[in-house]
Length: 489
Image (cartoon, rainbow, N blue to C red; front, side):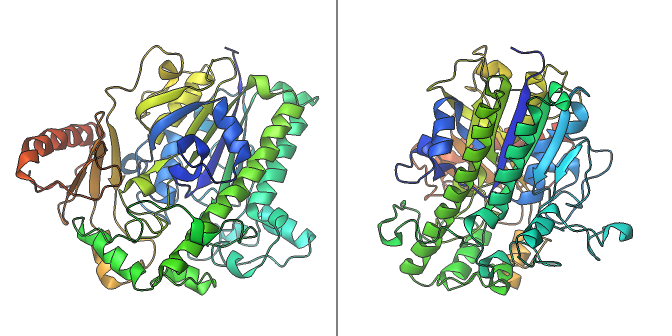
């Protein structure tokens, strides 16, 4: 093991676990991620801490749960005293952050990252707690678009603009990050600065909606494989999920998407299939740009000394259970790909069974860098799992939902129920318990019911199991100092 390896963390936004061949998808075109998976540890069951952007990415970068960071929903800025991986790793490292930040002002380098490429102006304008003297600045991506003859979406998010922009592949945010991250890596070769090991986070926006892009038409909607939960209303599930399914199945869409022209017919199966096909096409768009970055590593002679981690901050429902987006405890929204390539560890064909949380990534990166893990970090390093010293056989994984307050989700009824907090666990023996004091709780046997079609919470035969698993949630919450009310079981 090198004393100071490079670390490349590639993070996508809203990418489902089943979007890669390594997770059973035989038809999607992701040759670069497939090749990475073949030489990586492939984690079977990797879960986010909360299925929405800001809370989840904060956990990935800090090793803390949302309740601890205070980033319990979108629209909150990370506190100055909350340390990221870049502030915990050795000063030997050149730390760079390229892409979606979403934890404060996206334009301003912060929290230990020296290199910075911004792609949004989120958190800068009036009403977003941006500093006045920074409001005239614009993201690097906007400057780059202008240099390519494109008028950037000043004052609008990429999400609300890209659907009608008709950008070619190379001018998307994914294209920009593929180019810039590759340049960063190539500049390390033969450069005096290249003597420093680097920690590079490349954070793609795609395949986050809009459900459209330059590769529309790549996949045939009519022949697209779907599972048993596709367009199936969750009749035994929570009220919030039934309300959301009713909204989407009746033609509802994300109001922000509608504003940006991302319109789909969700009253017909054909419309859902088209949306789903275009979502997966954006996964392929990311793959092509991941390929550029990985080729830069190889061609720069840095691959043998660089750890590569690939994951996503949450998944996407894409029509399963009749829903879109995330903000649900279903597997499609909470379980994501996780590939870890460590050049000096034999990993070819290594599947890591059991469950792991993305809160464990920061301590794992610190361990790989040879640095101590601060006592305040709540995640645990999985390096011993990679070296074969231990497994995940007894590892329970915990999740949170901390309520709605970032945008309208479609109706007052949905907004009311989405404000209810949840605490969840996936046990080592693959049972999932979702607890809410304000809604119908859920229990799923992921062994016999992997698509979560039958809620067993109210089954008399499961009462002792519910009590036992709920006790695990309670102990975890006590460790965190989390006083969120739970239902009596």
